Amino acid sequence: MGIVIIYSSSAAFAQSRGLPDSFYLVNHIKKVIIGFVAFLIGMSVPYKTWEKAARPLMYLVIGLLVFVAFMGMSAHGARRWISFASFGLQPSELAKVAMVFFLARLLTDKAEIMGSLGKGFFASMALAGVVFLLILKQPNYSTAATVMAITVAMVFAGGCRLTHLAGLGAVAIPALGVLMVSSPYRLKRVMGFFRPDDNPASSYQSLQALISLGNGGLFGTGLGTSTQKLGYLPMPFTDTIFSILGEELGLIGTLACLSLFALVVWRGLRISFHCPDRFGSLAALGIVVALSVNVIMHVGVCAKFFPTTGQPLPFVSYGGTSLVAGLFAMGVLLNISGQTLESIPESWRSHPEKWKLLAGAARARPGSRRPRGAKVAV
Image 1 (cartoon, rainbow, N blue to C red):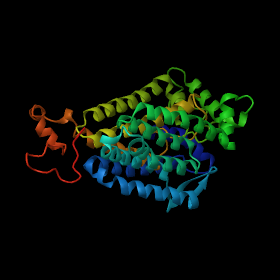
Image 2: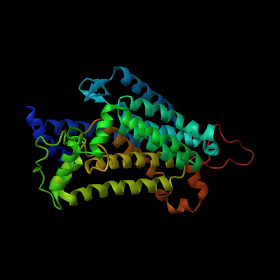
Image 3: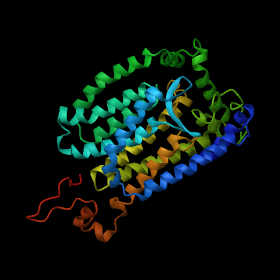
Image 4: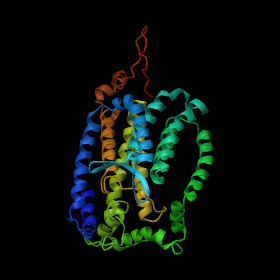
């Protein structure tokens, strides 16, 4: 679906710049191929491998974020990319996946002390706060908010106390509101959202996205026949591609797209619930939350539920680091699915000690010591 809509929405844009109409399509397909390789790696490598590699990956991503902050490539008023050859790497997209693995391991190690405020709750939130600030500096408010949403969901699932989470919310929500209006460009977008008539420049994109969705009606104007992509909607194949999809395929097309996302989310939650070990369960949950937040933000901006922000629609928008990272995460989710209780034969399921052994959580024999670092599945 993404490849078809990208060609439809980018052909006129490419021609207006003197490029072949398939220019963005060809580039996107190259990134889909890279993403498919990443998907196969995620699906083939045992997910417990990422538990061991979680900390080095997180520290590597933090290093890339620091590099971006001082030496990254600037575009559209933001410094978010590392450019090499003809490719651009966006470390903030990698940070979402690395954060999922890091938190899943950290919360597994801290399973017995998550009820404490210092060593449990604050220790689990500390590094996420550093990543949040580094991404915010780019500036990239939407991705920073996604990282924080992943962190809160996983820490909650990891067993923190609701009073600790509520206390953080009481401080963080007003602080996020202040951050939203403290920057001139963010303030313009907020004012454009609440008072579009008084801020036509800031509200232009969101209003054009709404017009695009409205043009589609129930069945759409037909594939390739959108008028909003002809210079009215900025970058129609990236941050507002859902509007083009709605214009050309109508409400039926948008519901079909959202239904596919809902299916992935539902299956991801089942995988998380049935995974026999804590790391896999939390990693699956984090992947599902990252996908869900991205979809909600993108669709919400196109439907004018939220102020304008740059968030691609996973697997549909023009590809890049977000596409490759997202496909890799889906591969990991499938690998976890292969180890869930649902996938274990009935003959094994009737003998709990066997599937506990499969999960690496079998009880030590009487008189024997559990190896250092071994953890009981929760």
